[in-house]
Amino acid sequence: MSTLSTEARTFNWLLDTFASGTAGVVQAIAVSSDGLLMAMTTAQERANSERLAAVVSGLTSLAVGAASCYPLGGLNRVVLDMEEGYLLVTSISAGSVLGVIAERSANLGTLAYEMTLFVNKAGDALTPKLIDELKSHVRT
Image (cartoon, rainbow, N blue to C red; front, side, top):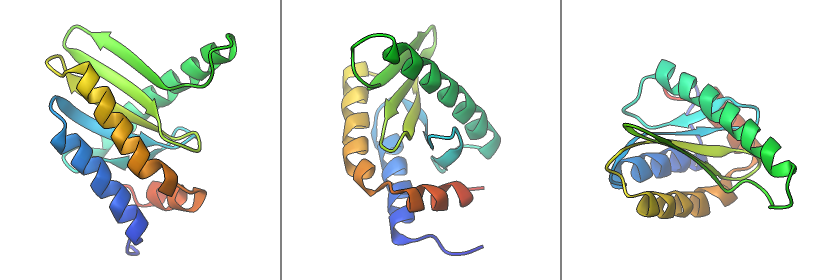
């Protein structure tokens, strides 16, 4: 297994820092435009992260399709409000998205702000080359 580039390590570090430093975050993943898992927080199992990536990809597809029906612009964020918590999806760049599972006690305003900070830090660095590297070296 080859060593990750500095950019890939930085992206993974930013994701872990976001998840561990944001109150209420249970799990965070990054999903590429083709629906594949490209990064996940260290404390999660790969199978669970792959399942979440499929859900996030489907939600993203539905949201983008709905957005195209109305003159409201591109996708910013999807929020699923469930009895015991939240699932949030935010666009990163190049069609990639950040998916977050959060506890019910999480402050949605703070969570949205922290997600935006992550996107601002990680989005510009997310090139097609980096996306390919991240997808092929997702933590096991």
